[in-house]
Length: 89
Image 1: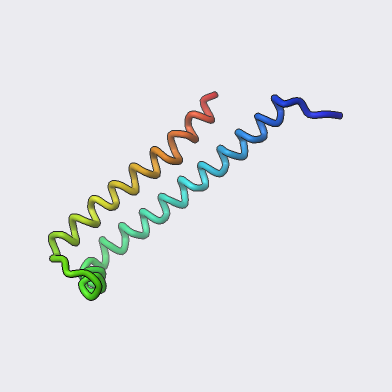
Image 2 (image 1 turned 135 degrees about the vertical axis):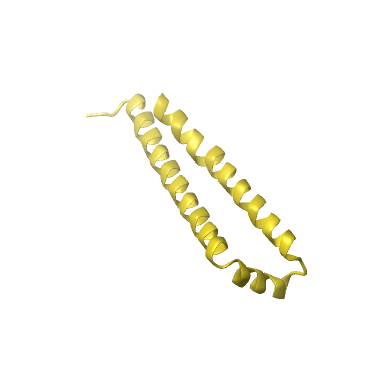
């Protein structure tokens, strides 16, 4: 029994969709951990980063805010939207 090329494509796209949704969920978990650290320990995070970088509290908050936004958009564009497009076909 041979498998046609259409079945190989189906298996490939199924596997790709599984990888994309897992990557999306791992990205969301990373973002949630970052948010929880920022929410419950901003002074601790600021103190650790002040040892390495010479930035003020305002800049530290801006970097975290914009960083979380960039990561969220990257996760959506890089993993979730391609997953949705694969599932809609």
